[in-house]
Length: 592
Image (tube, rainbow, N blue to C red; front, side, top):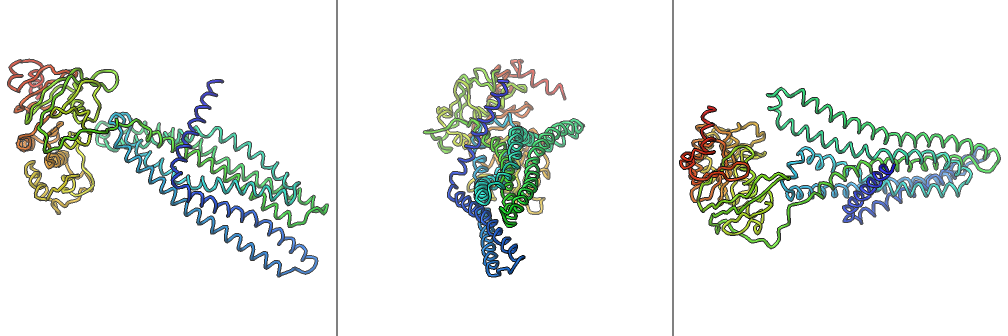
């Protein structure tokens, strides 16, 4: 029993915390929100005044049935009603327009902060979170907040004012009929509170499962060829079905419970009509009220139950909004990379090209990946890093690029610790060509120049000729202006050549090649290797390669095994040792 109470308290605390953060985003737009709320309140006041005038109109017509109708008074009341309801329409329209602008700006601000946040998160966050789930937070969750927030804010205040105002007017008009209307709606209050108490958990689960579904879809379609090749369609469908069923069940329960509220309130409203008519008929027979009072109370009853229905809808939308906000704010609250202040600056043109690893240790979780790694790399050297999968080759490069923070030890560039250099500065010093290629929607020229400064078409053509891509580009209809709308229009080798050309165009003193030639054929690889040798001349280069035939001419080969350097030397020296490197090298030819 105590356990359930604790969970309830935690949920309430989370709800309040998320709501507080959401209101913080509304604070800069306080003035337009207040104006919109005031307009919605004025519209509600107009709605409250209307039935009173209708009561007078009905009484005039009733009196006219037994004598003569005063058309002047009828005309005046009609004009008054027309003005009242016209003002109500104008107020509602303007407040809706203002709130739409405000909520769109809030959504814009949230997306902007998410975009900035993504660049501040460490890589380990993306290692444990699917891209589809992150995209769901940017699109689905932010859209839910924007779509619901406008109705929640304006409706909450206008319905509250309408509810209180109608309540006062009913008691002023006739307290007996007012009590009758109130008692008939108390049931609706009770049922609404019970439903609200039990439905929030389903809204939370709905948003979570929606993120899981998007993540699954993104993963499947990004590797659709693999799914087909391994005949995993049935497994994929089964997993999709499972996630989809979870989303369906949570959506069904949340929709069912939230859908009950308007239906219950509509039933209570209709039930109130009956009660008012019965009570009103009794009072009319006794001569205590006129028929106009009954007509006014029927409208008051609708206006009395209407804000309850609206409030029920608001709380339903608010629950969905809070669930979406929680996911967005959880993302924005993720731990960022350490802030960099008062950092040293090493300009590219001043860099000598020396790098030293000093007893570097690193682990992703508890088990160490890199253990006491040390190496001294001199300017212009071509360093090859080899070893079996999981030895720490790519991890070592990620540490050098400051994608991850080292646990202990140090890495220096020209005698300056990378801890004293900003990430942007380090990234500017390196050219990095990865095994995983990335091509975006744009021209070939734009893809190669990507974020490059002062690069001409001749510069692009020069690097394309070196990597053997120029001939292929000339065969395209628009040459270098050909738009790559679909990255799949390029073969894996062509995309790799394009990314190599992009890396060659960047003039930096350090170069990292992480399996950069793994997706090209043997002949192309030979041509690229020659171009790479020219590119690496005078630069300090790191090459990660599984195909050891590509690093024979390296100045130094570091052989990694379980995070340690077990051997180092040139290709010929390591083969003469007949150790672990020789075993790796010979095994590749044995497999062939």
